[in-house]
Every structure is written in structure tokens, then in C-alpha cells.
Amino acid sequence: LIVIHRWGEALLAYRKCLEIDSKGNYALAVSGFEEYFEKFPGTALADNALYWIGECHFSQGDFPEAVRAFDRLLEAYPDSDKAAAGNLKKGLAYLEQNLPEGAPRSGLGLREPWRAAQMPGVPQFSDWLP
Figure 1 (cartoon, rainbow, N blue to C red):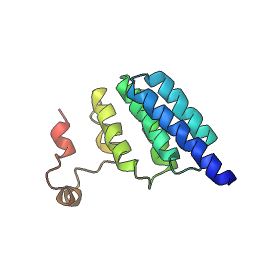
Figure 2 (cartoon, helix red, strand yellow; figure 1 turned 180 degrees about the vertical axis):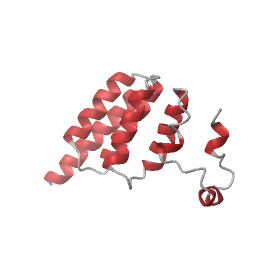
Figure 3 (cartoon, rainbow, N blue to C red; figure 1 turned 120 degrees about the horizontal axis):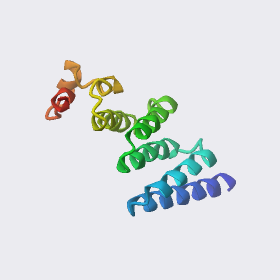
Figure 4 (cartoon, rainbow, N blue to C red; figure 1 turned 60 degrees about the vertical axis):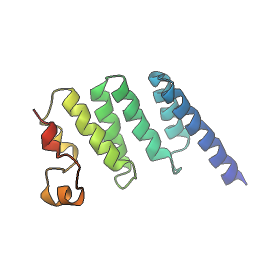
């Protein structure tokens, strides 16, 4: 019963953070997701919290902080279902900073021919580079 209660508390907190994010209050959402991650690091949504921290920074135009946030996600949860999206947004954050040399190193690997063959219709990352 304690585990269920704890998961219910975590889910409510996560949903509240998403709601705050959806209203464009990114600074408050970052604080909420950080608190979520501190209080509930072992939950199924802990990786999502780190991802949304990066998204919030990206939405605020704080691209260096977005890169750091996505790095936290990728280091802590390399096999997360949010890892691919985190890699993509990290690469885009580099491009937003006019640092295309960092984008391919973000781990996207879209320049790899086998990867492109697995994703027909997906533009090559090099298509976005100046």
C-alpha cells in the first residue's frame, strides 16, 4: 500500500509539472521537475522529468542549459525511451547556438548510412547543417 501511495504521489507531481510546462511557465516547471527527480529518482518517470527539464530550457532559449539537461538524461538513462528525443533536442540546441560541429557529436548518428536506411523519410542531420 505504501508503494502504491508513493507512486500515486509521484504521478500527481509529474502531471502537475507537465501542466505548468504546458502553460509556458518554464522556470517553475524546471523547478518542479528537478524536485520530482530528487524526490522520486527510482520511478518510471524519472527519466521523463530530466527530459522535460531540457525541453523547458530549450523553450526558454537557454540552449547551453538545455544541452546540459539532455546530457544528464543520457548519462543517467542511456536506454530510456526518451534517449532518442533527448539526443535530437541536444543536437538542435547545438544548431540553435550556431555550433554545428557539436550537433553530430550529440549522438544522433543520422549521418550513418545504416541508420538512415532504418528511418526512411527522415531527413539527414547533415541536411540541417549550414
